[in-house]
Amino acid sequence: MAIVELESRDVRHVRPPRFNLSRIEAFWGLAFISPWILGFLLLTLGPMIATLIFTFTNINLIQDRPIRFVGLENYERLINDPRTWDALFVTLKFAAIALPVGLLLPFSIGLLLNSSLLRGSRYFQALFFMPFVIPFVAALFAWGGMLNAETGWINGLLSTIGIDGPDPGHDRAVGDRKRHHRQPRRPPERADRAV
Image (tube, rainbow, N blue to C red; front, side, top):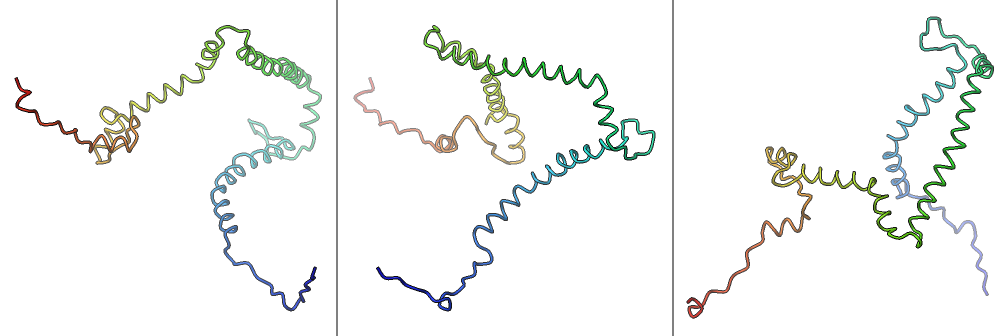
């Protein structure tokens, strides 16, 4: 086995290109996510920080006095208020009841619907999922009616400005074949057939 030693003067430092693919992808990734980041900073993180700062001041909804720093006075008043502990107890009681019921009841229904002991379980599954499916089917029919090629009001408005609107009932390729489809030729009738 031969060992090849490279001297440091023979190795050239290769600089990566200034605009390589990963930098371009990073730029476009930041460009597309920047509206979300901006919205998060202005509409979520900013108000959260402002609210935390306001807890150390005397601010209220009827601000009749100038805002001043009060330190931990608001927190002291919160801890000494008996309504705080009542509200906390009600919240914990609700969580202790709602969480097990919210987990165990759907799990039990799912096990029951998939059980081989239940007769007609497919019908119960269909009835169980109907409330989730019906709004989507209704929306499908509503949009289908609005975008109907002959009677839909959206396509009617689009046709007044010279645009052929979509026809959701037909695939584009199927629609093109229908428009340009020629009737099949009938064989000419023979004289001996005509009687």
